[in-house]
Length: 180
Length: 117
Image (cartoon, rainbow over all chains, first blue to last red; front, side):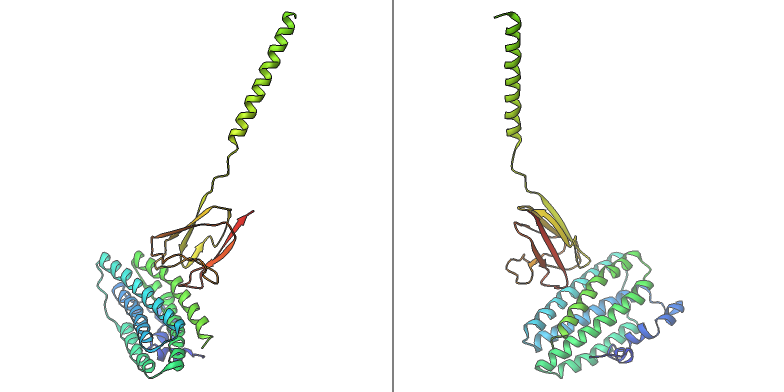
């Protein structure tokens, strides 16, 4: 399944568009940079959304491969959330909701509705295709916006340490998508 | 028997004793090669090193320095495998044969153990 940058942006409630289409503009306009509290909010929200998608999969599929993948996503992304919250607490940073967070949540609503409308093999395909698109968009976001914008070295370090995990998830999702 | 002959016999006897003593010491030093422990670090979704060469009977210790849980499973059939290795936990196993392995939780992570024989 092919995704254009524009359709991906729509899927992601605009975040992919923000990050891919206008990243150079965003980076040039320092006033649009995300603050550390905003980055913490985006990071926690993005991980929570994939946990939520995994929970939908656990309810709707009986496919062993999808169940295993969904359980891994739930456990891994919950782990990242725990570490992000622990770091925010240590740094006394209160995650601050922002336009990017809201766009992510809007995208989640759309995707959740779409996933809930599917059954059986159609659901399996929709879920794993969404995992490919979602992880690709989040990787782009972390790489081109969150890491460059992060001011605190520990926050930047945590974001950098998460990248190999996200890339592994993407590769796993792509391998699985090829089977459906 | 002259005094000179007696000295020569004494010298030879000493040399034989020394040679015998050295030989005994050498034999006592020959011990089976002790098995070693090698370490593989799990970090950044990789086994580091991903290929390791060890001697038969050596132990490999995996240390999870990553941010999520992993496991160590024989590739591809999982005929042997570890329990889940949480961050900061370890797993160790003795190897007598070369084998490839992977993390069954994150199958993109693969490693190879080669035995010197």
